[in-house]
Image (cartoon, rainbow, N blue to C red; front, side, top):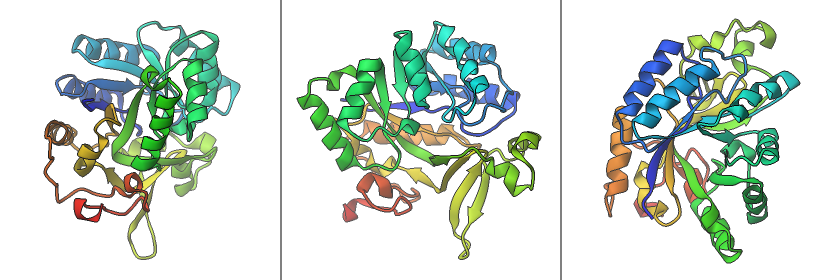
Length: 297
């Protein structure tokens, strides 16, 4: 099994022009699978569905496997109704990040990706997702390699491992939690319904430090992310025969060097250890912020 590269949907709120330029660069990159769309906050409307579809068609023409991502926290009927046009388009598979979207896809017999926000933790849950139409599964970000291996071994024993591929978020700030409150607005002393789309002012979210001035969390609207960048670039060898796609979650930094580095690591039988990798603890069943090297494993 050769692990390929996928690019998750942009988690932050960027101007339309910035988003379009970003995906022009992605079109000319070695990324094989690309996710598009808003999955954090329904108030982020710089791009419409027609805009996302136009970008998706351009990426598809460039040879990318394009998929549409949907909201991770659906709180109201209005937000649920926003999903209907996504279900009606016939060009791209949806990534379901809320169980309501799973149900809608199941009712329409549509294939879907089970995003990490669904928190699928065992083989029984995986089997139910496969029965509902799941063709790809993104592992919950806080779980380990050994846990993944155990679940996949059980899936093989039960005869359905070949019905889905596996993605692991290998680079980026981890989405840890979602809330009905908007933490970015709250940090500016604004109510959620009068946020004035303040997330546009924070293209990488707002970093929160602890009393020792160490990174603790990143506030990204209703989403709370890890304070450290998760990076499994040194751990690609341990993904062989387990992980189909190494997922990247982009921020406002240059994405090309990140993609090039990961492509190089995946191509090597014995990848070189990179000194400046950030944290990778969860993958090795440790505290997420820990940095584990080959000698520690």
